[in-house]
Structures are given as structure tokens and as C-alpha cells.
Image 1 (cartoon, helix red, strand yellow):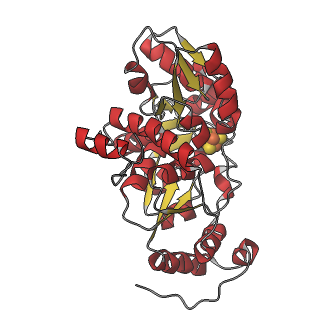
Image 2 (image 1 turned 30 degrees about the vertical axis):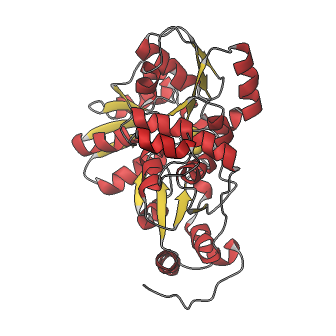
Image 3 (image 1 turned 120 degrees about the vertical axis):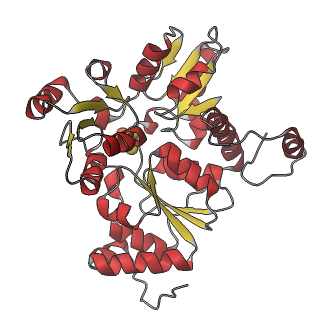
Length: 345
Ligand code: SF4
């Protein structure tokens, strides 16, 4: 193990004055000392992805968080993602480089507002997109991601009304794919994907006529209707490995990352302006400060955490990422004995 002897500086601003090499060295040293793992969402800055142990979309990173043997998880993403890591790994310390990095889409719905809607539809099943707070997940029956939303909804009996929060565009996509007419969608959206427009797509197509158009399901319906493929960011990463030319309708951080990986390919953003300022609040200097100081720690009320875990675990069972508890484990859980990797009945 490398032991750092470097001076710990007081504020993130002091770290901003250090060069990239020193920041990277500090991060790697402290990571080893804390037995930490760095999870980097696909929309992070390239320099953060370079020091991350795992890159991926929210589902992939949720699973890494649940499986890791590390004592500390540093989540470079937005707040609900770090909360998800804490929900799945309550015994671990979860840190965020900047606690103000929230997700405006997740902020569209609160636990109380969701309960008010549920009171109007008492028999409905609530599906929460993972881009939601732990409190909202705790009041939901099951979670979903953009990769498994259709699969999750298909497990719900057809005669049950579904409350789908918070993304209206993902809800419309799921409605289209499943043919269900009983989905009550929350009126939330991701400003990055909702702002993608047909004019930009037309321009990109004219410039790159042979490229396949791949769009994230958080985009609007009229844009999705023009896509050759609709898939999550994880799906886009897989497609980039197999195709020479893609127009990618998502946050451009992912496109920049893929261009670095495949410089010989034509990988272009549908819109150069599709940037999530919230994701970009994490910087290399804040990450170095966060590891040196052991801050900012994410904490959750245990009852909320437990109930949010139940909704997440149901989703992971559907997507094959988590083994359902055996009858014996259920019995232990009911008796209050907490098996490794899950927390509540
Ligand atoms: S890209 Fe959209 S959904 Fe993702 S964190 Fe930013 S605002 Fe939220």
C-alpha cells in the first residue's frame, strides 16, 4: 500500500491550483490508503473517468457498488446515484466530490408529492426511474433504469394502473413499447435530453449521411420516432464497439469518451450543446480534496434506506443483477438478521 506524506490542503480551491499529475497521484495514493473504489458515470469529465475503477451507466454502477469489497465508494456522478450506492452498501462509506451535484430530473418529484398522487390511485403500482431520490424510491414498489424500464413494466399485471416517476419521456417510450394505456406519468424530464430537437438531428444527418442515429429514451417522442436505435448509455457504449459511424443523442461527455476510445470512428453528438452541468460539477481537484478529507459523506435514514433497497432489489431481480433471497434468507431477514448484500424484507 502506498502511504501519502503530502500536505493535506484545506479547501477544494487549494486543490484547483495543483497540476493534473499531482492531483492524479494524490487520488491514487489516498484511494489505496482508504481501500476506496471510484465509480465514474459515463457523463463525467474525461480526466475523472481516467482515474475511475469502474465506468458505466446507473444500473452498472449500482451493481458495482453492491458487489465491491472496498470500504469506501467515491461516487462521481449526481446525488441520487451516490444515494443508490449507499442504499445497496450501507456498511460502506459513500463519498461525493461535490454534494451540490444533484439531478434536476430527480428533483421534479418529492416523497410527499408522490404520496399525494398515490392517494388518487390507491391500487396503482409505482415504478420509480433510478433517477429519483432515496425517499421517492422508498415510496415506490419497484425501480427501473433506461435499460430495463420496458422489462420492469412488463412484469406488472396488465390490469394494474402504473404511476411512473419522474421522467415523462421514458414513460411515453415504455407506453409505446408495451402498448399499455394505464400509465400515469409524472411531468418531469431531463433538460439535457428533452432539449434535443429535430433540427439538430437533420443537421447531423446531412453532415454524416451514413451514420446510424442512436438516441437515449429520455429524449422526446418526436425525436425517438426518427432514431435507428433507442438505447441507454450502456447500450451506446456497446454499439460504438460494433459500428463505424454513429450520431449519438445523449449527453456529450459520453461521446467525448467514446471518441477517445475509438479515434478512427465517426462518433458525433446529435447536439454539441447537450451537456449536463450538474454532472460536470465534479472535477479532478474536488475528487482529490474529497479523498484527502473523507468528505462529503452520504447518509440516509435507515427506514428510508431499507424501503428504497426493497424497490431496487426488485428491479435487480428482474434484470438478473441480483439473486432473490432464498426462503431461509427471508426467514432470517424477518427475524431481524441482516444477510450480506441486502437489508430488509
Ligand atoms: S443528464 Fe439529465 S438525468 Fe442525468 S443527471 Fe443530468 S439532468 Fe439528471
